[in-house]
Length: 397
Image (cartoon, rainbow, N blue to C red; front, top):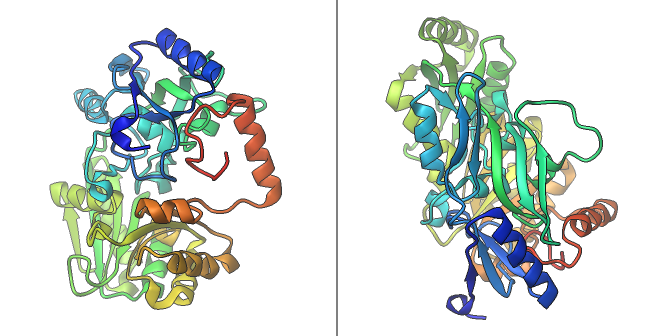
């Protein structure tokens, strides 16, 4: 079906969303869930008969700065939430990635953030988005409203419905609201820069920094050609200004053998980490496929060596535990990447590629049979008739 021919349903509240989903289920129709459109290229191509949009579910439900908690409707632009938090010197701890550098358009929303588990460099110290989401409201595939979690963090018995839905790309339900725990905005930050390390030495430096007692909140490496003709390794510390200066000095001394050369502060540091967060250094050329690979930092260099020249460009985040890289957009390159990763037990996600490639290869890591069976059972529990985002994560689910 041509994209422009797909009708879009835009409920104004949760009750209307329930009615729309129930009607679609009764007719045997499938629905592609859409938000602001900034993650449109993530996952397999859409297959639904109609779209279900969160565009009219907009606004902050409550923000209690003293309790450091915020709830917002799914269609609320992320920029609006961050502006509200900025007024109280607070942040979303997980530094959410903005996919527009890779996909070129749309508006990041709260629903898209949760659906993609959109997390940035600070996850090495603060966790991913799913670690900060403490409550959700969603509509399941039967047209029923579900509320899970609440205003405070607490232990969960049985299935953790919050974490199940974070990163599920809307395959389990139509999100209507999300509640987050917050953190104070760091007063200051400093980034240590080390030039001209090869991949192995860069991983060693990042490992040493992350294993230090100095509270490193970002550890990344850009390979040669990403803004400079030489590699650059970055290590960030954040917090109260006096503490940041003290810890940066201590970290410089700890890393003396690697030859740290300078320290970035203020806006220079922030702009750098925004670019790392959003994988801006891989955005061009736009015809390349972009992959996000999770692997043990100690095996990252071996993985890249096995992949060889098919890796056209790469950067490390998370101390080497996250490898962003680009390849030619071909099934052969996709197969070679997964073969290179297989001995190390990692996970590879095809983040950007033409629709034809996303339909032809596994976008997400292929699951072993037992896990695939469990995935089908979880899908059936939330969405027994397969109304939501058919095939978005795995073909046939």
